[in-house]
Length: 299
Image (cartoon, rainbow, N blue to C red):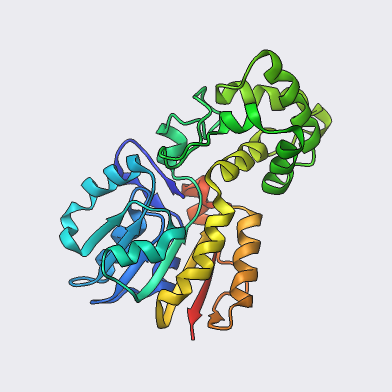
């Protein structure tokens, strides 16, 4: 996840210095950035592994790839971009002739490009089509889930992926609303959630629709399944003493990373507690406030 302005020059990758400290990129090393986004982490890894370090960067968002490719063209063939989700790390590495790497970084979550300029309904701050696909080649959209999912399916999505206590009530309202007005836009859904949740249960610090938007996005993009896959298959590609750094943005992801690291006998955990952004970074980039990084090393 990143901060993003009108130009790539003010793109601010989260926990950058902490990531570089743990990943320790060096000349000649080969590194995987599982979430290229706007390229901030990739750029820093390439700069710190010059002159011959290499990054294999994964992303399935074509818009992000196009922007990053232009921004990072100065690195030439030291950067290889793979249009796949990081869950497909084995296939992606096979395609570029790589089997083992010196480090893996996974920065989970939305980039500001997706939030601010995506036009895909990730945010309820703007009225956009309810799409939420990070990869537009996928068939299932947020609108299709809301309009076709059963009441129980929707309640489960809101509860398990969003940890929303009003999940059943919201699902009930969704089912009634779509009989008259099928869901098409982000504002339409946000307004429905606001109406469904009694004011006494509106959170103080976040918008009342925040958790269900998160839940819907996770469902559309099978995010937890993808995370489980990289945590399982990524370790096999690490060289001895190479590290995996995972930056997550909500408790579901963080708990999964913590558990999977502990369960893997090939890994030594380097972060007893998750690394968080400094007060200064949080002040400069509000999206860093929820960032949590865990790091493990291949034994």
